[in-house]
Image (cartoon, rainbow, N blue to C red; front, side, top):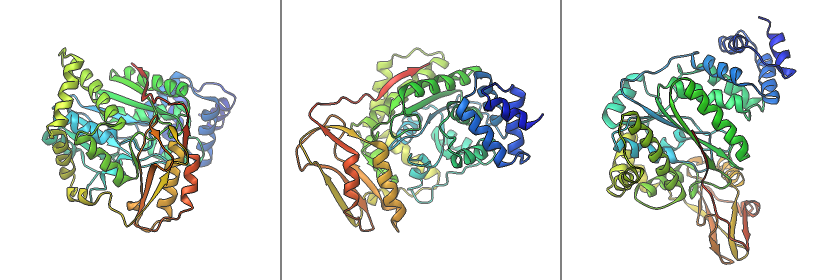
Length: 424
């Protein structure tokens, strides 16, 4: 095949054959196709899109580029397209594991302005996110749940292609995102998959419409491999939790596992209920949703979910004693409301960018964080604390000015809608 011709076809908006797509993916992974030519192909896909057959072919080629996992039991998985202050996985895993449902959560690190689950769980010093297949099986057998990073031998094509996409402004493409995510989900061997597709300022998908398109594409890919897949399109205009920064987000997780009500906890419990429903259906059991919800509430209120979370951390070698000092820092700076009214916007991207810039300039990067005192729709008076910045390094008062564009207070109350649409 001629790579130039393949790129030219796609540049003119024509479809490549499955064989041509496979040729490109395999050739680049093997090192036979240089970065500059792969960049041209990715840009052509990003601009002109890809049809269903091309997208499925990309996913298949990436999935087959490395090892695939196989389990005797039914294993479930959940994936988020990335958001700000989104720590649902760390709540979901111990809940489902406490229910005896095997969940393998293969997660990544932070990308750009989004947080990564692996960065957060590694707050527990000593945690080894890179586990062998033998240890994965042991973890599932012992605890029914495990949080790990993607192994080097799983979907190596995706790793190499994503690294190039990140450098060439070709991340924001539905076919490329869908094939990347689903190649990894399918390679893990999970039979039941829930996809959390984010939209808004703190997500890769900025519009709900495009998020629904991405969700539909990924569900269709999963169904073609006979997997039970559903996608939940959720809001990411404002941070999901009340904190930004790894240590502070772990503190949010522990609050939920202690029974504190929050958007973060409510969404995690919604996901747990949906996955459990699919799991029980697969097992031939008809269990009412209300009964599943009651079970989840009991698991949290009894302390079983929190205990399971610590079991999972300890199995990975993590030191749980760090929870005693998670949010203690030398310096803090409060940002106060400049008028009275209702919180109508807490811009997720802007808030995350502020924390990122503080982190980049700090010597003790792990200590940097932001904690919100309010949520969308809350009523505030002038002078009320909106959020607090934390660090073990001195915080410049100039950073406060950057928060002015991230926080909007209006006269009219705004209602936040966590779940926009469910795609099955």
